[in-house]
Length: 307
Image 1: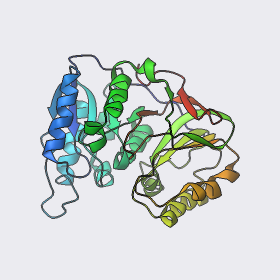
Image 2: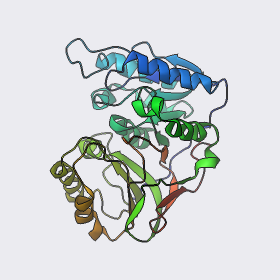
Image 3: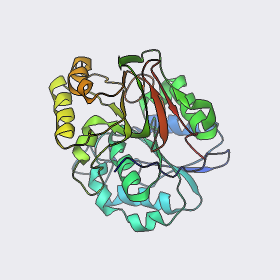
């Protein structure tokens, strides 16, 4: 079955309430404060979830206990006064809370914006498979790139408030690996997380018909090769329409690995489009029909990211 197009949440407007949650790792308070100030400067009513600044008492890589992280996320999603749930940072921890969420209850409310990247890829996949809601692969409120790079913040703002203005995505670094044009629904995120979610109750078994977006951070080339090979052997890449590669910050050079592992798929491939863990980052909608023009190294969504 081909990757389906998903339901778009509504765009934001000044005065909307947004909740910042930490479903993965702990976030530095100063960076979170700076990120929240940026959001407030856009006219948003920003609420920091009760446990967003927690640190687990045994495992310092987690932003507090699993039940608390899950509770913050679920409470924000179920609150009818909230227009968006924005993640504070990635790291690790989302997979530990996915089975604690009441997906039935969460399906019963109007869709709203969910934004983040990195470890949040597991949430993107779960919101697609369990809720049918389109999400944003976007900078996180407490991430260095959001608080330090004006372009990153502005593109995120335009996607939230004026999504029709950012339908075509590219970057100065974008270039063609395999030429051609493809149409499909956007799917993907952090490569390692996509591989880790394979075979789980919330993971996607196939990206057939999709335009696959991939990025990662701080990986050896052999591990990137291993993730791609694992997904290929599981059939995840069977029938994909095209592939778009984002940033590979602090990774060993991986473009040759990509050519080796992806060229024989026979689909267009663009490299370094500029989303993910880079020093500047695009906001990319997931779950929407789009056109990949590998010759011009552009990705254009058919409709604005938010309704």
